[in-house]
Image (tube, rainbow, N blue to C red):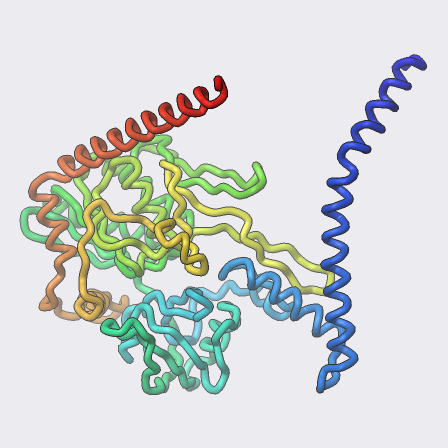
Length: 454
């Protein structure tokens, strides 16, 4: 490099640094001010709080508060909690049989598992768990709450819950439940043949054997002459991602998009596509969802909906589909941080932000055909279907369906008339919406150009 070039580079560097330095300094200075405020608060608490405190406890509390402020799934893990996460390989455990999520800061029941203590006691989806024995659960980490409910088979536990009053919309505390923990072995599939050769499969969740059991059910229904299918994912809280991908792949063509993840960093973008030809690519389908359908259920229903492979009937799903990454920390603790969210093939965000009420229309899967059902009536349907899911090795209970199920009735009606009619209508509406958006964008651009000319 000659002398003249060196001088030019030096001048350019000085100009670049001099131009950006005020902005960089401003950002650093703002951060330093906040850190200074944090240290002042920390020292003031240590010196003046009514009880003695130590820096380690205060700093851990600050970290926990910072992470909890992000979303319901990011979490600061104490060393003991991180070890539990790493070593928790139990497929069977002593518990109550409740699938849980975090909603508005409350530990909330997604659904009780069929035949478990919670199910037999009448615990319902949407119930909030307030206390386990005498420990308050409000704002407690979900994993910590789950551990309180698990325990030795045969041991007892007291649970206090609240339930939403449909008339007032308020949650009312229920009488205390007294449970004896049992070994929980979830069952995942129930199926039967409806009139007009319509197969019906109720998928309880997406666990390790869901795809295998679903395939057995579909094969049995095919032998019975199945010509169309109702896949019921109501109150299905999800489970394994690969289980969702495998189920979707049973009905979709090769190399079709199932779902993708996207975060702030490019490396967090990941696509999940079908890897082989479907076993049932042309089987007319209706998928049932409701507010208890979450996670893997939403991935499956969203993929089938966006690929025009099935008609979705019921109510808007729960909206739970985000990706967490665990970062070990120096003291044996760890940070579990949400780094990406799941999107349907057409780019719809599945994750629903319950904290930000301005985003109430974002997230979850919206059905093609909405069927609103009174919560009490839907509870009857839920309890009825779950009562018929039986434990292997025991005699299958006799099936009597007495509760009205308008969602299933609508699905049967659609399959009789032909789901392709609804799909075609949906495509027309989407095309019209795209054309309208393009026209509006063009008009906005013309107006912008006209302003620039003036």
